[in-house]
Length: 140
Image (cartoon, rainbow, N blue to C red; front, side, top):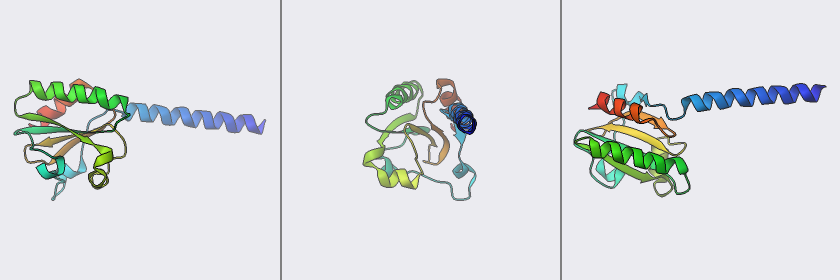
């Protein structure tokens, strides 16, 4: 009987954690960096190329990540349709120093930067197109 109670409790806890994880997956949120006195900035040297004039969509990916491929397509499409916006893909495995500095814990992670390279928004998981477009509009 005690085993069944423990099993039931563990199952309920796992379901609750799964629901929380799923609810947060892909959500774009403002970063603490944007409100700080010294906001966190990325320079072209960090990303291996120039930033967008108005904004940049930086997504961290890894080789065997299926949602990373979908994120790449989404971000590239939005950047092509938005003037002054650049899509930048960063291989997380090849840039571990940057991953650690930015506290990237999973892929895909999307960062929305303003024209000066300040990180304004962040999402982990596959974001929704409407949320990326809205975040981009807020930043630009």
